[in-house]
Image (cartoon, rainbow, N blue to C red; front, side, top):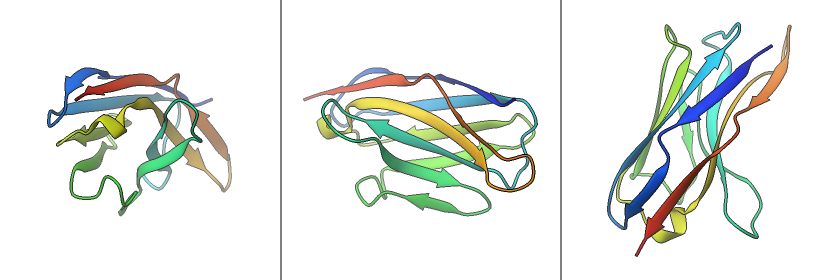
Length: 116
């Protein structure tokens, strides 16, 4: 069973930076998809960024956020720069595999608040 634990959220001023981390326990393959989603109040959860051997970003964060992973540590990171108030949301880590011993795991979420 894969479990995820996020850290690194908090309060930051507009234009500031935060780095989120998500450590996975269990059997994780480098081919598993790991990513970050976010959900703002009154809005649907949306994909922010995902990574396997390549990366994928939401248009709203391209050029400002960088996703990376350390397969030896089963950890995925999200470096967020030039933060805007509209980035305020609960950020969730996700890991999934759609073949073999398939799974779809979510972290508990970490709050990111950007003040103007």
